[in-house]
Image (cartoon, rainbow, N blue to C red; front, top):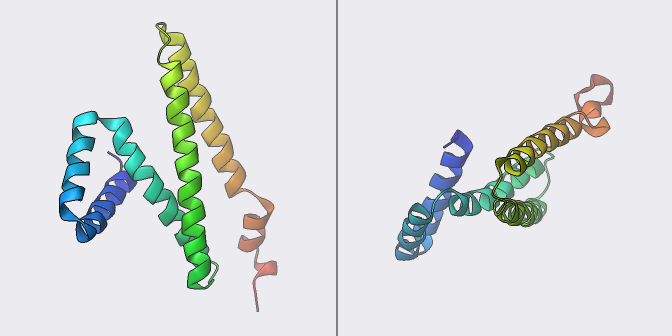
Length: 135
């Protein structure tokens, strides 16, 4: 498990245990029995919400805007995760390995392009440029 997944699972389990310990134990036990995909469902959504809230707090916005960012980030993470999980479910019914391999490579390339595109956007470049720094 990667560091962010471990952190998200730890924080999510701690938060859930504070609300209802027995439900948290039930869900964690179920995730352990069913495997990796179910685990990612419970990790990616809170992690998306936390990342969006953290990104919003970097702009020094109020708490309502941070909460809105967390809700939108969690919703987008859920939508993208369920879309990916559904497409994988359909792809994995194919008996030959070429389709699965091709889908993995295409997804990896798409994520690299997306990550590069968001990190090199004009807005993020402008924020790093000292000429646009607030005085």
